[in-house]
Image (cartoon, rainbow, N blue to C red; front, side, top):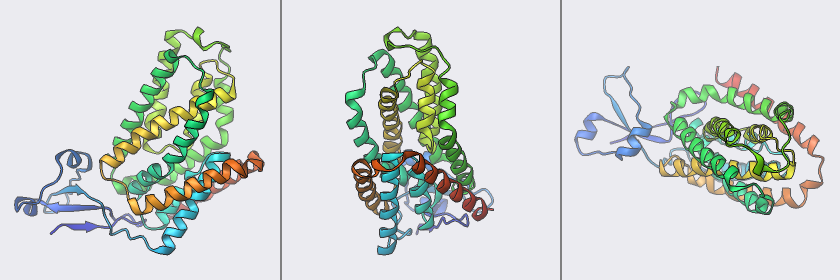
Length: 318
């Protein structure tokens, strides 16, 4: 009989069933494709275990937890609609409810994607870049998002748990200093007509976007500012047009990651469902009411939350 192992902040493991070679010889089987993704070799133990990903209900969802996650996702949706950085709230919220680190990241990505997709639809009318510029960027975004998602799924839970504070801190710093990074990148020659951009510039920019997309598929906090910096190297200055392309590329990155996570069975759907509802409600609130708030103050709040969460997980994972 398969033995589910729990992963909590202490570093144990949850969310997957592990069956021994003896059990497998008795007829237990894993999906060959998923097995390759989630394969874990416990060489320090007498028996080798083959990982069989499955929807794990050992990470229970009770009504108080559902309310907490829905509320956290609503805050995340509001922040994303106004200033960005919603993952600094929703991702730690999943960890606080004892969801394993990798699965918390995958579930958070899936939960927040509908709001991002809705923003992309709203921005479509501002997408005036030529196809020769957009297509390479979208293709590299999808490829990078897929590669980053696979890299995340191959990362051991314990390793990713100890990467969490560093990823949160790195994302917070990107969020805090993204405008300065964009300003430095913006020293490139200004191009008023994107049709004038050379193929060499498009290829170089697409390669940089590929690297950004790998990070986006793996974790993604602060990716919006990295993408704006990439676009600034093309000579773009129209912030509305840049925002439209940034949103499209972020949606492409996360779409590739979301499909990979769903296909791999690495999403906790009860948690994800309540978070989708919360993020959509928060996004609607942010679009209609919170826009009146001072974006600079909202940014300070996001940065403060990111620093506090980083400090907490540095202490918790020691």
